[in-house]
Length: 118
Image 1 (cartoon, helix red, strand yellow):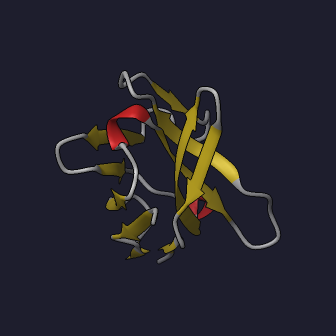
Image 2 (image 1 turned 45 degrees about the vertical axis):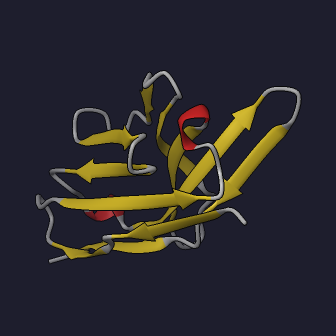
C-alpha cells in the first residue's frame, strides 16, 4: 500500500520560514519524481516544486529563490524549505509521487495546511 504522509505545516508570519516534509512508503522511492503542489481556497491545485529521480529541480515562478525542494533516497523523504514566506503562500500543500515508464503511477498525500499571517 502506497502512503505519502506530509508533516510540518502550520502558521507562520510573513517573512518567516517553514519546512514541510513527506515520508513515502510502498514505492521504490528513488525511481519517482517527487513534487509539492498547493491549493488555496477557490483556486486550482498548482505545482510548487518538483525533483526528479536524478535530482533535477523545477520551481513555480512565484517561489523561485524562496523555496527549496530536496530529497533523501535513504530515508524515502522529500522536503520543501520555504523562506521569506508571503500571505499568498497560504494553501494546503500536497506531496505527489509520479513515475512514468510502461505505466503511469501517480500518488498523493493527504495534504498539510500552511498559513502565512500576521
